[in-house]
Length: 338
Ligand code: PEP
Ligand code: MN
Image (cartoon, rainbow, N blue to C red):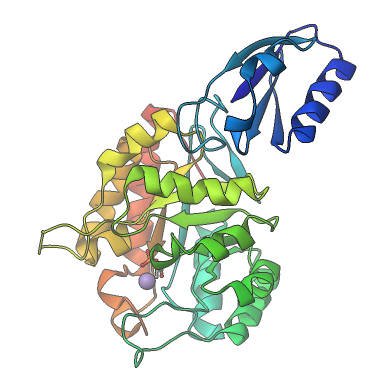
């Protein structure tokens, strides 16, 4: 439910509406706008009569929010949410590019990658220290040692770090080291983990579950928002279909409806979506064309030697070429690349 206050409502009237909402055992989310303030209400709304609040001084109208995801919906929050991390702007007319190897492998590789990313005028580097691998015998990542290594690379080069957290026990450690915390596709419905990252103050990159509907994805984001963390970036990383020509199917057709229903930024991951390096550049450009706010791309100086996901990883010259094309295409679209 959304309570829209009058333009001329006083701060005392706003305070009194907020405290009445709290006294009813509900949660109030003040949403200041340019001309008037609205208050989102979440909780068990069956326990209240809308008229109870509608009649309070200073209240202009009560709007019923029909979607099950409240805080993530455009009904609650009309304007696009912009997440700013260093020089990178994600959302609202911007296209932000994040790049790096699938896994943190060693310091030399990470330094080389970070220097390369900075040389292209980019800020965000991604690499997993904790890796969710299908096989228990595959490389599982460097763990906490990898986090420390990422911190050293940030300090030396100025890149900002995107890295995944897999377990609730590691949330504090990952949040301390990362600038953006990633939740992978396998954990999109790990509710204890979503609740825990809702309590931290770092933006969350929330990948879509590989078999999740748009509504399930937005409900996962709602867990994080409901915990108090308002900076959620959605990431379409491909879903399972019957096709056998690529690892997953990059569902670009989810981007327009997502943007219509939800104010959060949405980026694409063409690497995990296609699983094949040749398809990564064209699908990145397609993501820009259909309104995505960015891309997360696996790059490596020698992809065939990568410890994980080499087949979908592009080398540095291919990435540089892709950046040139993105910048060329973004100009007439009025989109800013960062
Ligand atoms: C990753 O980003 O390295 C990763 C494991 O992605 P996903 O969760 O989308 O499979
Ligand atoms: Mn990977």
